[in-house]
Figure 1 (cartoon, rainbow, N blue to C red):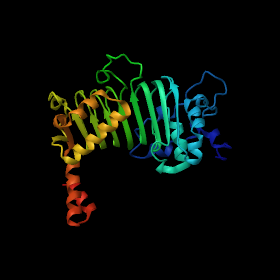
Figure 2: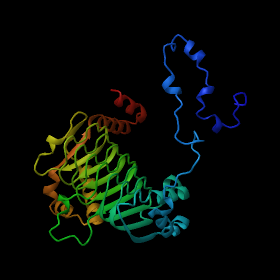
Figure 3: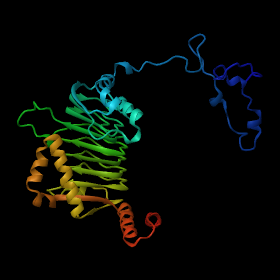
Length: 344
């Protein structure tokens, strides 16, 4: 740099006139390349314009709702003492819970806190990415509704979204939208309970979270690789497109769900006793968290209603699970069995 006349790397940024391309263009593979667009030095309307980032940006993080949540959760962050409180939220409050989750992870690592150590209830409409990357130990509840990307990257936390208590008596939650698109995108663990219908691409790329919802739009469980999803209502088209792992259970009393299913990678299987036990437990948790009317109706007539559930199972995932079970039964190497099943 000294030979080129630069004292710092910042001074060298953008100085394309100091680059010699002669040797590069002389190579037989590159002699026809026109490097002009790459080496063009744009003109600036400002005198003495820096060619590198020289000013900081103000993202308004000091005004974020999470700053208040962190203060109100201080006892849990410092000593693990459970805290529970309520506050309001609006759609300008985005990624609520993410900075709080960072504080939990910073203090307690990837194991987080015991479930429900921090339990926060919000009244209002949550903005985009509510509960994004939420770690274990935090429960966020919304009495209202939410925008897109709820629970993006969920990492062990719990999210509950339900209508407010002051909704009219004739309000039917399972017929109304409660949250937006791309919910649980890339989630790895945790739970979500949503009393109402959500938008498109629900649980896209979910790899470990468990969720209950009362209806989804198009492309539900797209590219899902793990976790379990329960849909207590209708789905849109192209359900399970690219779904290579995990399991989905869809309540289908009118028998229309198969026409909405993308069968390229999945089949519809019968539910066994383990499925029914887990499903019953999840619906109970959903009812407990949201007072779901449709959940209560299903549980009240469980012997009949359980027969209306369809189980969406990826073929390759099923083959691997069967290989694991057989290897454990016979005492053979599980890893080898998985590799053989995955490549078989």
